[in-house]
Image 1 (cartoon, helix red, strand yellow):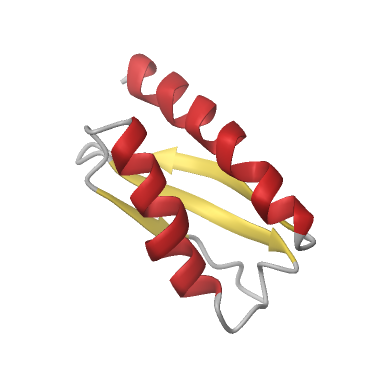
Image 2 (cartoon, rainbow, N blue to C red):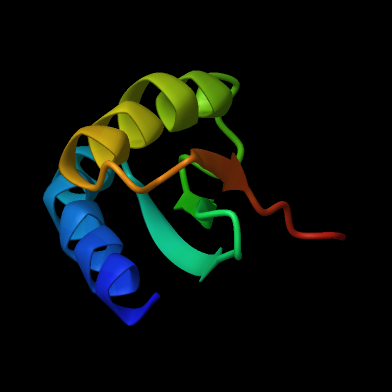
Length: 80
């Protein structure tokens, strides 16, 4: 699990500049036992109506191409 976490962290570092260019960011929350990566979108990405598309078509697609063990990427929503 430590290897996949390190790989996911490296992949997120590649993705992060694109999100930051639009005022957002992504942080890794956890990777569960089924290799589902849970992330929190922050900044402009957190409230963006296109956030799910960014998550699935951008972040998930890129993570799976870099780290094939990743089963899925899911958002963690802050409860307010």
